[in-house]
Each structure stands twice: as C-alpha cells, then as structure tokens.
Amino acid sequence: MKHYDKLIFVSESDTSTSPMAEAILQREFYLEDILISSKGLVVLFPEPINPKAEAVLVSHSLSMKHHVSEQLTADDFDDRTLVLTMDQAQMAQLLKDHENARNVFTLASYIRADKDIQDPYGGTLADYNRMYEELEQYVLRLSKILNLEENRLGQEPAQEILPVQEGVG
Image (cartoon, rainbow, N blue to C red):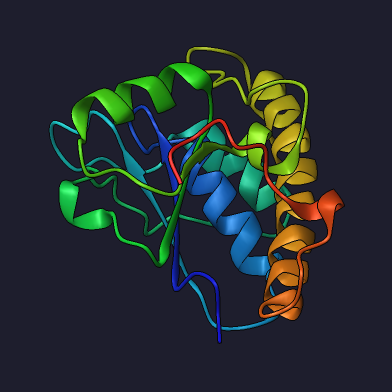
C-alpha cells in the first residue's frame, strides 16, 4: 500500500520552480504510481511555463512545454496527498489561505536540506540553470526518500528518512 497517491509541488505562480520540480520527479520516481503535479498560490489566469525555465529543462532533456499554471485549491488537500512548497513564505501563505491543509512541508524541510529553493524570476538563463541544478539535487533526494518510505510502509520508519516535522501533517 502506498503512503501517498498524489504529490503537489507548490510555488508562487506555478510557472517555473514547481513545474521544473514536477518534470524532474516524473523522470526520477520509479516505485509505485503516484500522481505528480504542480500548482500555484496565485494564478490569476492560466500561463505557460516561463521560457527560461523551459529552455533549462530542454537542455537537460526534459520539457514542460504543454504545462499550464493551475491554482491550488482546498480540494487539493487530503490524507493521501503530499504538498511541498519551494520556500517557507509560500508554506506560511498556503497554511494561512487553506484551513484544511495537511501533509504540507517545504521541499527543503522534507529532505532535510539547509535552504529553500529560490525562484530566479527576472534573472538570467544562468540563474535559472543554477536553480535547476540545486532543484535537481533536492528532487533526487526526495525520490530516494519517497521510495524508501514506500518500501518501509508497514515497518518502523528509519530515522534518516523521516521529514522534519515543521509542516502540517
């Protein structure tokens, strides 16, 4: 039995960091089927992925060219959905906006990393590439953690794979 059926990466507008994380995890996650998506905290109208984010993805043999930003809603939360924000401010806003939020963490806290993923909005292509490199390392660690959690479900969890309990779980 799977621990989560869905994983949602959340960023401010769902046009760069969260769809990039979605693309990386879709390439890396091998165990059970899990629906991986991305959503935004503030999506006034559907937008495609940021062109610089897409260019960086393509340079790494990935693409989200058909991605359209989508608003996070109250219906996105349940016991079988893991929600990962890119930074603390986004998590705080999400928790403020959604009383029913659960299983919410920053990506960094879930994988026990030291710093959040920063959106390079307005930056250069090199800035987006630097963010991708960091995000890829975080998502690779996330994939390992999720696979370990799935393999150990029903067993006593190993301390080294447990997420930091700062979110709402």
